[in-house]
Amino acid sequence: SAAVVVNFMHHFQLYCRLRGLDPRRTRMLQALIEKNYKWYQQCLMLDMEVLQLDYFRGKEYQDFFNYMDSTGGFWIHRWGNNPVRTFAVGLLLEDEDVKSLHLPYAHQDFCSCGSPAAPKCHWSAEKQEYSCRDDALEPPPRA
Image 1: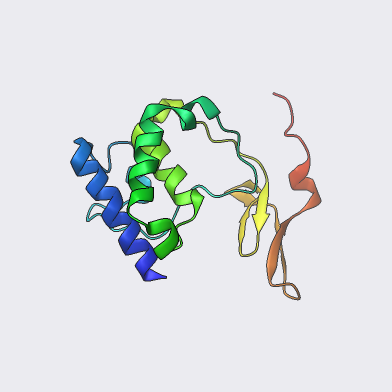
Image 2: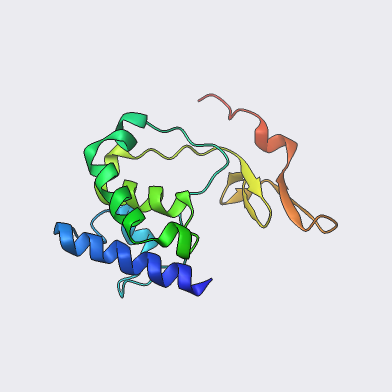
């Protein structure tokens, strides 16, 4: 709902102000947050993530998480883990420390199979969802 977006962004920006951080300091955050500081619920959300747990157990992340938790947003506004992790990674890590794996992925009405120029997606009108075509799962040819 809209309340989720507004309240999450409000508390994220407040955290940034309290810690002297630019809420759009990385390319990742610039891609998520408009220049007028609006956020349209985009975040990293996959069925598979490879995480370095030391980072999430560390002081900086724990400070961010504990602040966000102290606002009650997880309970009141039903914030999920994906926006919190996405914004923490974008805020607290440098762009070069974040790696994006380009793996074939399809879920409901989203498909990222193949290259953007030649997507390898199949839409099922019956199920109302995408799936990756079989040839999207083949390893790319070696150069």
